[in-house]
Length: 435
Ligand SMILES: *[C@@H]1O[C@H](CO)[C@@H](O)[C@H](O)[C@H]1NC(C)=O
Ligand SMILES: *[C@@H]1O[C@H](CO)[C@@H](O)[C@H](O)[C@H]1NC(C)=O
Ligand SMILES: *[C@@H]1O[C@H](CO)[C@@H](O)[C@H](O)[C@H]1NC(C)=O
Ligand SMILES: *[C@@H]1O[C@H](CO)[C@@H](O)[C@H](O)[C@H]1NC(C)=O
Ligand SMILES: *[C@@H]1O[C@H](CO)[C@@H](O)[C@H](O)[C@H]1NC(C)=O
Image 1 (cartoon, rainbow, N blue to C red):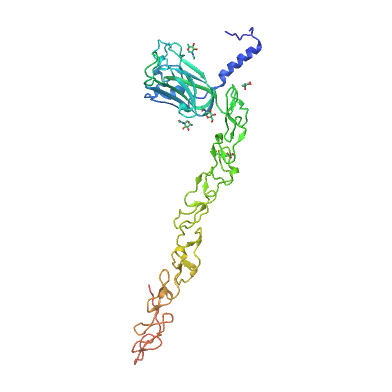
Image 2 (spheres, rainbow, N blue to C red):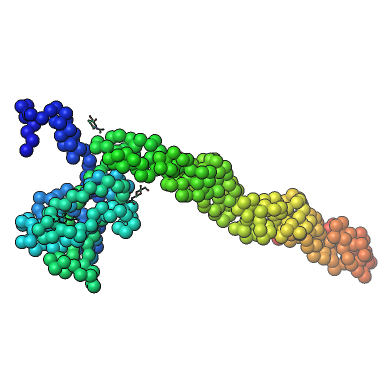
């Protein structure tokens, strides 16, 4: 082996290279450590949980040690770790379950791993990802107990998969069924995207590149808002996001749609809201950014969310396209078609139902002041009464005088005198309280 002692016969630059190789192997970090993991046909209990393969423990490679992910034996075995975001990966190392026994033909667990494959994907579907490794050559003698594959790609999920499908012929040293049996899966890569190199410290050479090859720096994916092999092309007007594949919403100014995330920087067109201006106004609101509220539309929600015009007319008491204007003075009701009654103050006639809010003019009664006082009564609140409708034949409801004369046997301005009598009844028109 190479000696690094001071008397080394190796030239200095060889030592430097060796030193760099040593740092390389230490620079990438295990980005799978303690990330969420899953396995199909999970056995019962924490002892076999999928997360055991990313817990950092690999001192006990037995089934009972609680450090391995072990699923039930079936036709397929799937295990994955969710790196939670897309990571730049360099290599993946897998520690198979050996039960702490010598590996190889003598270990009856070896056969369960033959034929396995390893994928990196951006989804939990391995077939949408990149196949890093598929074993079609290992035997019980050659499969290693600790397997490493270099896979310099970007992805969020690392998936271990194996199968024994019916109708497929496998080598006779393969098991009949498979299970996961993974004691540790280490995914070495960079903790952040946008960098490459053995230290993950060199920014991707192309400024708008987000995912560059971990070793060479060649761009493999642009930042949102850019495209092209070197991410040199800005998204066209009206598009944004990863690969410029998204379409801007209803921005007030499409030039102000962020190519990065689609936010409309100067707000939305009429009828839309939200950062992206992709959400229609709620019912009952309209206009730019949905900031206006519908008027007194007949159906409160039937207001154009562009300009607020009421589509089915106004509620009683309101007029205009927006139904935000009260009826003109002296009118009320549906389409302002009704005329107020004899309100004491026409400015206090309800625009909605015509009620005279401060009472009626003289000689009128009722909420609407459209009803004449009953015969024999007159004046404010119909509280005046003719002196005596028994003696008076048709009392003037304004003056109280007996305009049509007295009943037979009675005379006087108020018909207050009995013919032939001296005194008689009271000579004044009585006030009568209507309450
Ligand atoms: C992967 O992790 C991310 C971040 O925690 C989470 O939002 C997402 O739902 C996870 N996906 C799956 C399939 O578990
Ligand atoms: C995951 O997505 C990134 C960004 O779009 C892309 O560069 C990468 O190739 C994808 N990875 C896989 C395995 O498809
Ligand atoms: C298959 O395995 C044999 C024996 O280990 C090895 O010599 C050979 O190179 C391998 N072939 C492939 C294609 O990996
Ligand atoms: C890695 O980091 C070391 C120490 O910070 C630095 O000397 C070296 O140049 C870096 N290597 C690369 C490839 O960035
Ligand atoms: C969207 O991008 C713009 C700049 O283009 C930024 O100001 C804004 O904060 C971003 N919004 C979100 C939700 O990330």
